[in-house]
Image (cartoon, rainbow, N blue to C red; front, side, top):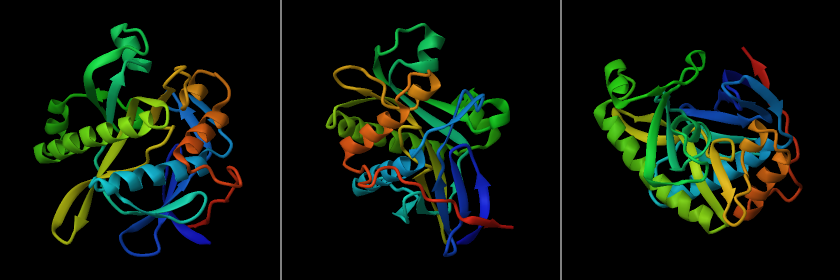
Length: 253
């Protein structure tokens, strides 16, 4: 199939959708870390992330969290609503880990007294810098109402996903999500966008603290593909044929 490519990021390609207001989101096997300073390939990652994100987005929609997700199309693609992305990465931290632990010299795995929300400005050239609510307001990246909606949805998402992952023996250490503005005639609402997967979540085994996410790639721990497959298996969405391949559509200009 030939489609017009709209955008290619580190882990996904966006194509023009079959109907107005829709986009086809294609999941790649490419992996990056440290603002793309480290690059590699995780075999079958795109297939697994497509399944995992489909499942989590669907479950969140069931509890009333609005998302851009419509349906999965095939092994590597899903149909989503076209949204105006809010240029912020919303990071939720339940336990100290990664750069947060380094910044505050806190031992990894330390439980935080309450979930901490951080904001990063989505800009690869600047390295996605941390920003405060004052920056968001001053530069007009989101209105006060937008931010209020984002915070409320983020806390609901964290509560739900934390419980869901505990149910399959995993700790939700931290995660990154993005939101978009969905326009329906003259009405606008904030919806969850992008993806939720081991690319964007830190997931540790509840008993052993074994890392089951992209940290295995970042830190050269090995067993990256197996960790992603195990998360999919516990969620009950591991493809029966395994993470088989599906080529991207041919691009037309």
